[in-house]
Length: 120
Image 1 (cartoon, one colour):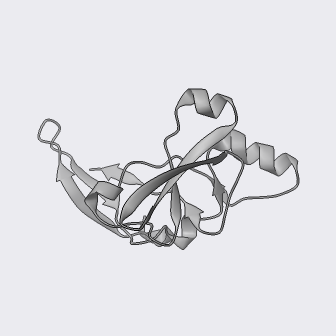
Image 2 (cartoon, helix red, strand yellow):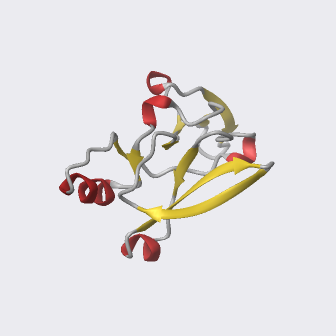
């Protein structure tokens, strides 16, 4: 997480497994994870057109822990029926609310990234 500009932080402890849960709590989507498509299929579709994104990602829920992505956005897990039709969803925080949008999975932007979580 730190290598790509993230800020890992302990956000919980799973009493069943004894694992500590880390999320990437950087205020904005880390620069080292931007310019990515939603998933591999979306990335390959874009690359076939001669455009090369930085990669692809599936994100996890984060906004309930604080105010994140107020100037950037992150890909979020997309239902398979939407993905099968070529779409993917992303979210950001504006006007003190989290907004969820749609885009084609091959899309990528300089301010859209993904985040991570880790259990140790």
